[in-house]
Image (cartoon, rainbow, N blue to C red; front, side, top):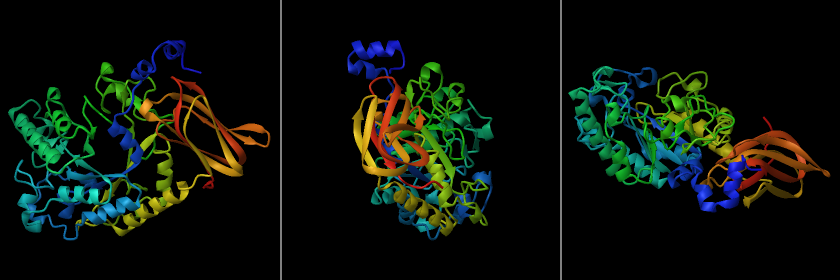
Length: 458
């Protein structure tokens, strides 16, 4: 049953704690992040407020701060949409590529303090985090040290990418540390920090940001640097994780732990079953990605909003493959979410709740290589959802699902890793019982949930 003789001997002769210590396991924050399953990223920056539209907000000129005037901005309404979409966490672009700071900052004179909006007292970051807490949604911040037009920073370095190692770069690094300290200390606990394109460490000529996070937000998710990546980018923006998809990846012993490193690039989509670092896949898509692709608002693009039925398919290929789905939501110049986007997200949340709220049968907290699930009476099913107790690591390596049809056991589906969640779909069958057979595992399997559904194939 176990993967090889060495692991089998470990199970037989070593204490359980010793076996577990050799297996990567998630932190508490990573467990919570994986349980969240869905997050929204609200994308808004000063050029959009000034009605300047470039591909993915790459406008490379400063915009007059007087032009920031999202007159209808209401973060409570944003988070109501997140709630409707069944999101459990949300992020906001505190600063994007313009470098305009959407909180009260003393780092440099290009932010809400310099804008007449709300009498120069506005704090969208603070309002957003407050709205998250009211909606019982975990708050996160998107922060760019990759591009900053105000600082003439592009590709992580000043002088439009040419200033690595210069005094001007060092000055910017101190500014970035000031900004980040403000964000990590002014608004209470932050669940998730997302650095666009990651960060550069001091050894790479960048700011010293990770210690600030670890000091002030020890219970959060950090994404990312070459020294720490609590989650990993899946390697595409089309909503698709690999098959299989492990939560583990190579560690520092094989190089940097970042999606840009050589050792990670080949493992982004599927992970590495032998990896020493727990870093589950983040599958990110812009809501406006249907026959188009944009993370920021531009007029005339309502037709590229993903319909809710396509979003459900993205759920299957992300959450249903041991990953997390992040959906980017555009904000209009007036501070509102377009109605067509609200409709798509609301319908998506409604469909999710309808599809998966009532299993035909389920069992929780099981152990061992064979787990049986008896149905009250023969029923037609076409979905099985499995979850491991990931607090103990990803133990399952191969599994088979069988249904009892009449007096015979018939194979319904098979797979490899289960992890946080794996969704199996198959042609509808009428079964009286189900059996999960784990044919290969690292040590004794721990199953969190084994549930079956009749949903109807599309």
